Image (tube, rainbow over all chains, first blue to last red; front, side, top):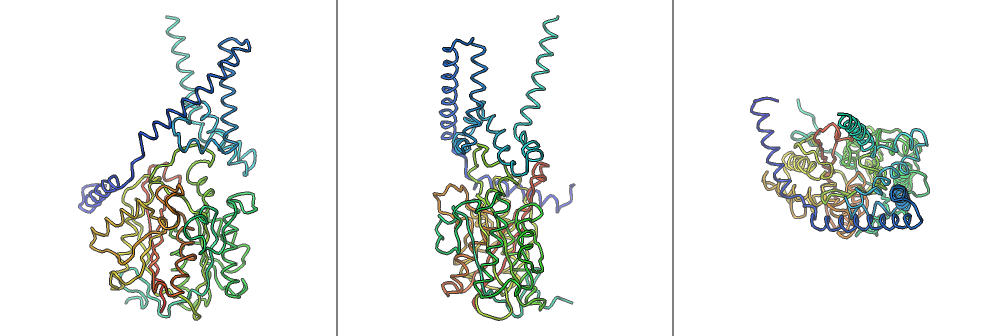
Length: 156
Length: 337
């Protein structure tokens, strides 16, 4: 790196090429993707709502019903991943099926299925959180920090 | 002092062009639904082919394609003096494990998706150099073994970018021989590694197009052949996005291959197969060569082709380390002489 003419020429060429690539590259169909994400994400939430209503009707408290609903949705996400349906849904829905908790289940079950061939320890065991790992690490860290912050603020 | 069989900067001219006496292709179900289904020797019913992992399936495809090319010519595996092969998987295991079964002297190559041209080039040089009389050149790729190595687990529900490519499930093998009959490998241009600073692994065509153009330009300059010399100049796996970029770059360098310039990644599938930009993988140019192209050249439908297989040379590690994608392309001229 530096100011020698060859380097500068190379950088200029790369920049020019980068512009060309951006011009030729097909753009993702944003509106279509958004509609798919909205509809599928919304439908997953409707299913969650129905399940929650079901547990409330069984006589559970609202808080228990919410927990049971999350567990049920994780189960459904895992089930549909196992049936090979969730990835096809994800191809269309994008964020619509990644953001809900079913997407979290998908991101754990998919590597578990994939790496079963390498055995339960070094395959499933080692790789199961290869996608969800960052979410877990930073999610836990954030929850601990917020908990500490709450503790400090409440004690003031 | 110059090398006697080299012309220009990077082109090998074969003094006694080796013959491609036999060839075979095995493709996956999706490739078999494309426009060339009748040209492939075997179309697999599913992606596992009675194996228990995709890696084993890929190696079996390479091995069986090699055996098929050998048996089509009425030969035994022991008649092969050398096997040159490579593939996309770490440590080129598909080729190594296939070579273990075939049991002949073996040279493993890694050129990512450029391996079909690279193995032809190396094989032809060895035959023409008089080191072997009969060499087997082969390569393979498998959609799912490549996906799990380079991208995310197959069942993970993520959206594909419109510029992304579909790794072909395909294997191709050819036998190169001194003497015989069939199309001949007349010359070959070894490509340089070109990196134009592209970092998007969902747009490999953009990373590889400059390498393809550089090699094709060098080929015409070195050989002095006119730009319309070949009935078909065909790149390996630039796919739709890369092909458009290559066309633009050709205009820029003042060279337009004619009458026909296309890409195996564009040709392999038809537009409705959900492959976005098009096909990719070692098997992409391998099955197009050992499927339709060699049949057409041997049958006289085309008198010659220039196969320019293109390879993107990154790994998942370099991608995570935010390195750009280097690419290489090798050109092999196949003609009826």
